[in-house]
Amino acid sequence: MVRHSLEKLNEVLIGSSGEVSIDSLDNLELTGSITEEVHILTGSEINADNGTIQIKSLASGTTTFTSSLVIGQSITLRLTGADTAGATVVYPTMTWVNAVPTLTDDDQLTFWNDGDGLKGSAGALV
Image (cartoon, rainbow, N blue to C red; front, side, top):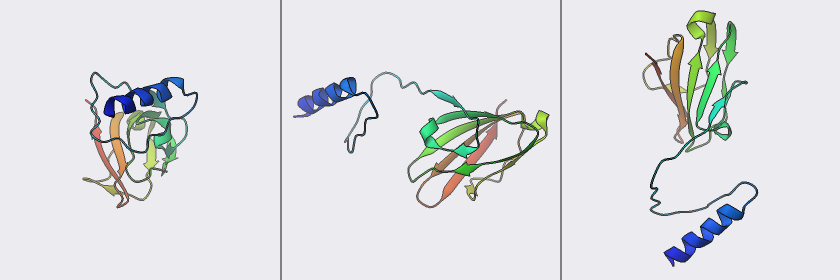
C-alpha cells in the first residue's frame, strides 16, 4: 500500500503542470538535501508565497513591513544596507523573542506565526 501510494504520488508530481497540494503525509523521510530558492524582496510584505528565504535591500527612508503569514508559516529575511543607508524599519504588530532589533548593515530576521500571533527573532551577520 505504501509503495503504491508513493508511486502514485510520484506520477502526480511528475505529471503536474501547476501547483501540487498534498493534504496529508505521515512520517515523511527525505534523503539528500532540499534546495530553496532565494527571493529578492522588492516590496515590503512578509509573505511565505515568495519562499522561505528572502533578501531585502533597504534604502534611506522608512520601510513599513506587513505580514500575511498564516499559522504554521515562517520565513527568514535578510536585511541589508540599513546602517549605511540610514534606513528605518517599521514592523507589523508582533512579539519579538528578545527585543525589537537595532539594525546593522547586514541582519537576519526570522518571522513565524504559531497561532498566537506573529513572532520574530533577529541577529546581525558577522
